Amino acid sequence: MALNDEIITKAIVERFAEKFIDNLNQDVIIAGAGPAGLTLAYYLVKNGFKVSMFEKKLSIGGGMWGGGMMFNEIVVQEDGKAVLDEFGIKTVKYENDYYTADSVETISTLCSFAMKAGVKIFNCILVEDVMIDKGEICGVVVNWTPVEQTGLHVDPLSIKSKIIVEATGHPLELLKILERKVGAKLFTKTGKIIGEKSMNAEIGEKTVVENSKEIYKNVYVVGMAANAAFGANRMGPIFGGMILSGKKLAAIITKKLNK
Image 1 (tube, rainbow, N blue to C red):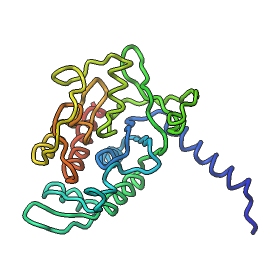
Image 2: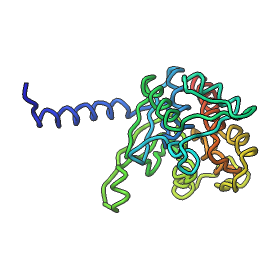
Image 3: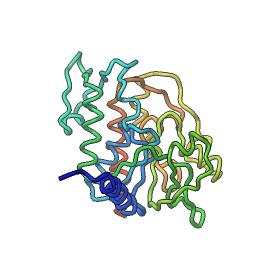
Image 4: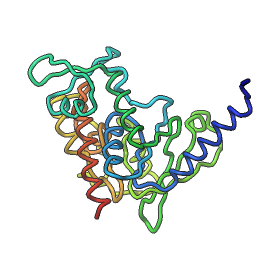
């Protein structure tokens, strides 16, 4: 049978529209689809919640693709290895409590597991604002990334959600919106974004898990965004804490949504 270009176009437009419309009212929306966000999304969906992710880049995975300085290997510690084992990701022992994993295998596997579990990922779409109802955050406002990049005056669309998660990493794009447009007093020591400190893997790996929690009513932080928001250290190409932060926050949000 000969292929019909019109049918190909129609199939793409209709299927995307169906997918987008089905995700206009969510339990959780995650801004950013890096390793912490993907892990969080996977466990939330496994717990029965409707989750979608919006990633401003064309590719998902955050900084994990490049490993350390484009050497596509990452390091995880014993606790982080245990979570990678759940996904069947191969790790190799280097020394006691130091394991390496291929960064491409790791992030592609996390993405695959999340999507097969039911997470919906929308790439090349950014969260440019939040929705407010009676003074509370109740969703996000999204637009195509090229619209922002080219400075076009194109109105966005809105998506409702019970909870939103800041997972944009170092840039803290979502929290900066809350500070600038909502005047939000965050649950930090200063009430504002504190900003990340310089690299210290020992401290950063611990605090990224500790800081993955609620930062404003119905708004949570995970992964490097958590350390940047609460003023802790970056940790570089060791990713165990990032994975563990996603799993921890999934348990917190699950408890909140089940109340």
